[in-house]
Length: 159
Image (cartoon, rainbow, N blue to C red):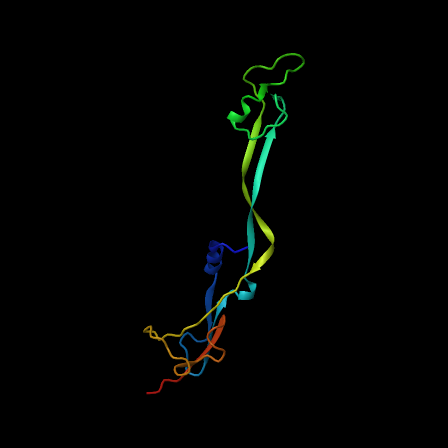
């Protein structure tokens, strides 16, 4: 079953980038950045809608039918309710009905299985002016730029 987009957006809102190393990168020294929390810890539990339909009747009400179907709506019940149950041969007081109740809706149920979540990442490195830096010329990324964690080594500035 597909995970709703809202659930994935909520999960994405918990992700952030964590950087380790000097606040101002030093040429030749690695700077490490990564997505946290670790992606192997991300899971979503599927939530299913369970139908809920409770119908109840309490004592002291008489009906001229054995079942109350299709519903407890007044239009469905009026011809079926005969009135209160007589007590000891004495008729019940008029206007003192028994109790009828009906509740219908859905209730969220979490499934027993968790759904693993994956993430595709592509890092880019930019100059403070916003211009993209060139891999292999301006910096090295020994493990590449497409994993959740990246190590970047900046080249020395040559003038």
